[in-house]
Image (cartoon, rainbow, N blue to C red; front, side):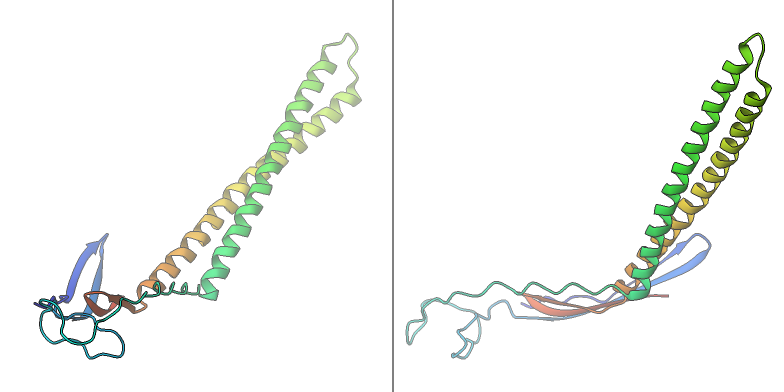
Length: 190
């Protein structure tokens, strides 16, 4: 009995554009009755039945399968993800600047209110606090806007880098080796 691995073709419609996925899998199946033989002996034909005649075969230890080497990341995709990470970090720094600006404004508002309550308010000190309020407002708004833009840009770069790498890896042919057969899988999207 032999197992055959069928060729698979599929297509699907995704949001107003046609994405055709073609998967091609080729396989070579081993007959189920073929018994494994030691390296110095010919393999037995047909199903293995009853005790084998001839010299006694001693069991040998089989080494564990080799660990496959990881697939290297494409340099362009690595740089895109790295740039996205850096931009996200800059967005975090802008978020801190926004917090500092809001804190500065809140402190200036409190100080101005304390100076305004007295019977003879110090107009120069109140003007300095109003200047601090304006600086805090500008710093907070600028930091918040920059943080939002940088976060969106960084997350987009990271997502695009990972998506490009995933598509690149899907297009690579994959060899399969198992106890029941050998195969080659290759998938292409267009």
